[in-house]
Image 1 (tube, chains in turn yellow, red):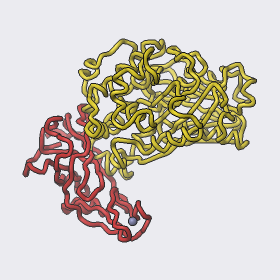
Image 2 (spheres, helix red, strand yellow; image 1 turned 90 degrees about the vertical axis):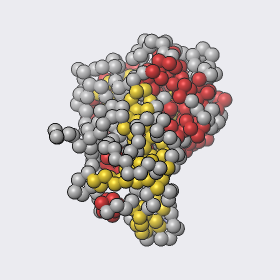
Image 3 (cartoon, each protein chain N blue to C red; image 1 turned 135 degrees about the vertical axis):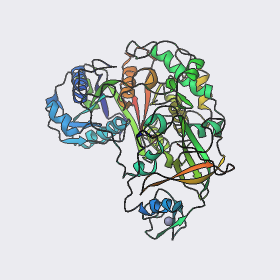
Image 4 (cartoon, rainbow over the protein chains, first blue to last red; image 1 turned 180 degrees about the vertical axis):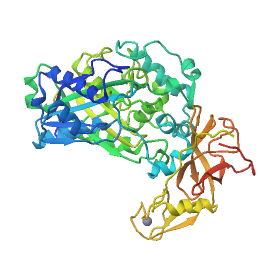
Length: 381
Length: 144
Ligand SMILES: [Zn+2]
């Protein structure tokens, strides 16, 4: 990928977020797509590349009336949209298409028009994980955490501080689901879901969507929006079964994706003004900070608890929309992390980071199964 | 006794049948590569380390340690919350998910790195699940 050759020119979320019982999942994709197209003054007929996850790109293209010359249905969980951005950037550079629409929509709470999410008993996960009683991400994604806490000496209080600090960011965001202040005691004393994770260490379950429009940077001046240039990216996968991670205290997919993102963009950690790390659960920003190289092993819990990622004083603003813990989380949160990076780089975020030039947006898919990382800037190089 | 909802059970495939045949006769079968001696799980008919198709199943010792876990507090068909969902590190190297039974389902009783030993729980005519209990406790039976 050539630095800054492709830009995000359109970006928007669904008109509403939260509980949206009057729209199907398909319509949430479309609502976000129409908002993103309106954002940059385009119509579906201007789009020749389509990417989505959770629904088939065939269904989205047909519903919106798009005839694409490039299609990407990569579906590796919540970070699929980071992979779509990376693939779209390469496709536009290679001339496979000129203008890509990436859509996400999910009726995570209301379950309107949503496909099944059953794991057959004959899959490896069905045979070697599901019989032991996990109930989705709250009992699978969380499984490595105790190992991490013991090996690194990270405390439960530090883990809880992730939720506390992100709530401070959410308090500044009118669209956030939860905005009331929290204390570490509130988090640790909340209803236990899967020890050591209380309800306040687990993400929300909401409805919503988002969409992005990408095109070549030399066209970026034709749009009314401030372009957000793609400087680089990375992606990888490890295992569909959390029990088979090669090291429970770090994510191989995070490390591979992050290293490639930094190398391809040519930035160093000190260049990063703003960071998004997909936070389905409170331990994920801790793993992310370490696996992306922002913190040394075992230091990320303290880094967050000591307010280095907090509003106003923090030198590394992290999850500034409030994150999946407080802003919203429909199931595949990656699109909302990307939207917040775009808002920060356009200078229009509710909790705006002053002088924000470089944003790193890091996603996870499945339970540490997959990862995608995008480096963006409002300056082309 | 009232019919209670059952837990999800595995449906063996040709590549995993030997594992589920093993648990029915009280063996926890792993596979070892004939070429590079790598021991691995879950089952597959080739070595994930060197891709050799020459591999052999063998009964593991059934000993391991408690590598990580959560204690699930929410209702789940076939389980009485709270119950542990664990990653067990087997003596031979591979990790597997299971439940730790035969001890209180509390952070105090479930100490990381504690030695565990397999026990087999017959769920149906075809399926026997490998569960684990603390190695120092003998013969305790706790329904999960
Ligand atoms: Zn081998």
